[in-house]
Length: 189
View 1 (tube, rainbow, N blue to C red):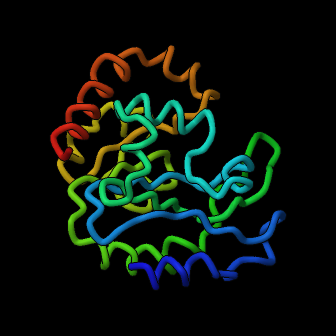
View 2 (cartoon, rainbow, N blue to C red):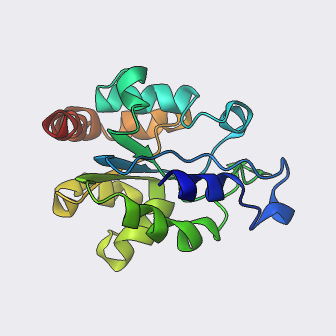
């Protein structure tokens, strides 16, 4: 696993498309039990090199009921985004994750992590890639029907503070989904 992560950290597969250059951000261990698949690092994470090292990460840790120590324990949690590098900025926020990363690297990563018990799919890019036509027509419907993807996958919206409006419109997320997410995380330990 260490050798593979070193290869990924040296990846330049899509360097020509990255405004800040390549800086792959991915973590994992052969004994990881939970995999988090999000979108791609933002500018703060690109700077620090630490996944989910921003307000979205604060929200995600809160949703999962974990402190930073447990969240960053790679024997517990692997963080494998759809795109490993900051993709740049678009009109209404960061660009989508680069399409090269997941097909090029994910299978190799997950082949090394045989103890994954739960994969958390955050946002539509991860859900589209991993659920395919099993997902609902909208992210909201997919998240609302999260139980149908268990026990393998737990689906979530992006924890960005920009999604606070979505959460306010969908109070069931806080009352039904998040308690079940915390239970699943605690069960795995």
